[in-house]
Length: 471
Image 1 (cartoon, rainbow, N blue to C red):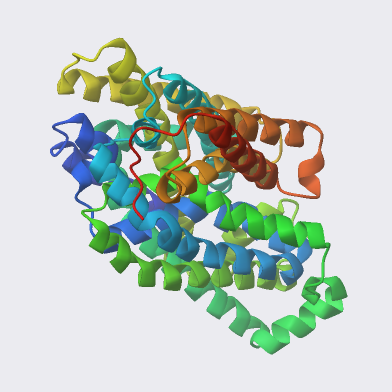
Image 2: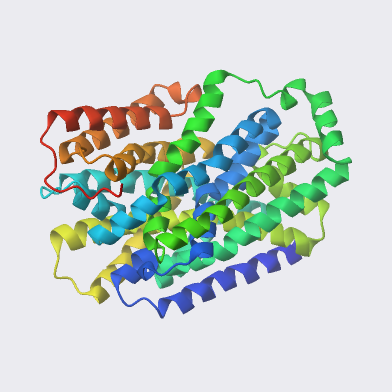
């Protein structure tokens, strides 16, 4: 365990060094929030994928597969494997072009300019939705960090959450989004290596994929039967295919790319990396059912499998891969929440004359506050890890119809956007509170109510004077 811990410490030091290097490039708020719009195709693609799958992949998804076998895993592979491709093709170039035309730093800038809102209502409502959902979603990642570090360090979960929070806060404080993007590239590559290698070695330990399937069927025939409840299948697919389109922390990847060409060049990369990550994690978790039966905490299946099977140095790399997955989303979510407060509220509405230095330092301060809030939720969560993450994801799906309509429908209006924001977010909250999310993911009501409200209200209100569509 000491060797694993040493490997992990070296990784953490490397992440902090990246933050220190990135801090030298932090001259303006644009640098801090969207890396000065200078990210290439590889950084854009891998950063996008690492952020999207996150700690959900190696912890929450792994736990789901360990409990249910490949019956659920196969549908999530189909859903989340295709979702990035759909998102890049459907809105990637359009968002990048809108960001250029409107000179938007954040997704709220983009929506406000596209829908010509001079009342700031879109800005205020969007900021509230984004900040709440981002903090809750990030808290789920902090829960994953606490679980991982408590196993490695053999310390109480609460202490582990605090230690993980300190590490993430340091490099985000120093380097902002540029540090996030650079570390996401490294973290994403480690994630792919870890998932593919671990799955291959674990399956080989059992005797190959056919032997794995036979063993799973002998444990429980349902583990290899893909025909589960239709509403669950629909929930998985819609949560991914619709949810990816509405996540501000993912959409900002399009906005920070050097240009539309980089967005297009990213498509083959996300097309290959997403299925590799998902299949690798699914096979590894399914192998853990056979090799490590009876785990008290299913979300630890991949972590404990790597420790049990391999040399400590290799296991340390896998642990680093898991931590990479968690941190890649935590940092992106917090930076997005911070930009909502600093750029979208403080700079735009309270102090337009603020200097770039002032805004960068305020961003750093709000980053620390956001980290503390996430840690507080993680220490006393309102639900299990999977649903803490999905609560935030579902609420943010509210934005998906608004991005689509902003790009493709000139008739979409300011009032329609406002109606969509309110209807989608409230619908997702009510859906969760009623417990209906257990049979149909709350991304569905968020998307449907947002889309319907925006279209109906847009048709009932005056068309915009100028439309920034990209078609």
